[in-house]
Length: 199
Image (cartoon, rainbow, N blue to C red; front, side, top):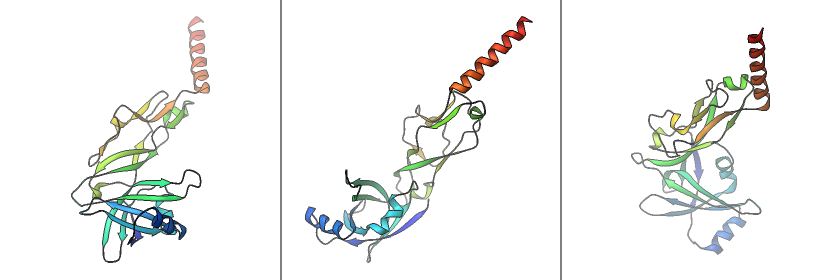
């Protein structure tokens, strides 16, 4: 998994008033869980944009001056009206301890069902996985080449050696849907078959 370098500053004061002050200075209050103690810090909005506004997932190397920690982003709170980033939760990673992360789904190949007039639909753009930090992938890649019309690729079909996928196994990740065009083509093929038999 890719890493991201983030410089933060340990917060000396806490509370709503201090959080409001930080936001007015274009800083985001953050919390790091998972260690011996909870660490409250802040980071510049400009340093967080490439971490937040991307489909990618990173292991974040947080530089707090005297202390350097690795973590994954767990939760973001946005303002309901302005979409301003209000708060971010991070979870400290430990080399021998599995973590839960939402990994993006990527498809490869050209489904044969599309050639038959169907339409591919990605039902789940991310999957919850549990794995050691060193085993976390950038994406979960699904080969859709063999999917025909009406076929689906379910969570249970995802092949992983080092990951445990936490989503329900019966849930479809990708499907090839029947369209009007494919239904008409199938009907036309059936009609021509019947007329051929009658001759």
